[in-house]
Image (cartoon, rainbow, N blue to C red; front, side, top):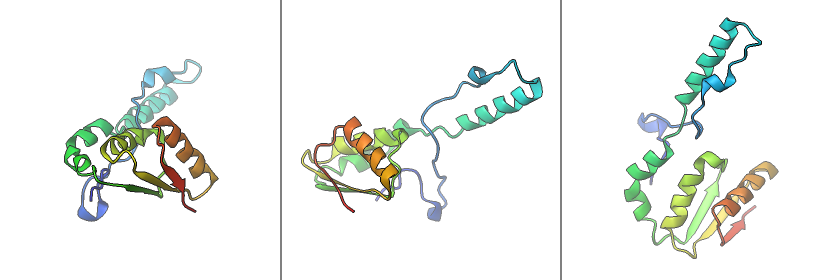
Amino acid sequence: MLHIHGRASSGEKLIVGHNREINPGDYWDDGIDMRENNERMQRLTDMNTLCKPVYEKIERNEWFFKRLNSVKDIHIIGHSCETVDYPYFRKVKESVNTDALWHFNPHNDDDKVREKKLIEEIEIENFVFDA
């Protein structure tokens, strides 16, 4: 089993965040005072520390993905299916059997919308929505 974002129970550093670097300068506003701008720049700079090293994590865990070649069922439970995680899903799709069946378990309508977007984006052909 692989906890690609870390496992709190083992004391590992947890990986959370987003997938794009933010340029604080893009958010400078000449219409507000310098102190407020500086605070804004610091918050935006701090947000960059939350950028997920997605491709680095995939590369570092290549051993895991190579072991997925006989997987025939994939269950997605309790996952936000946000675009930041698409590279992980693509890697899983590349690693499993081409006829693998993906099972999605949306908690609500918003989850289902994101799951449908993921299915379309990474071209999953064999899937069901388990309720």
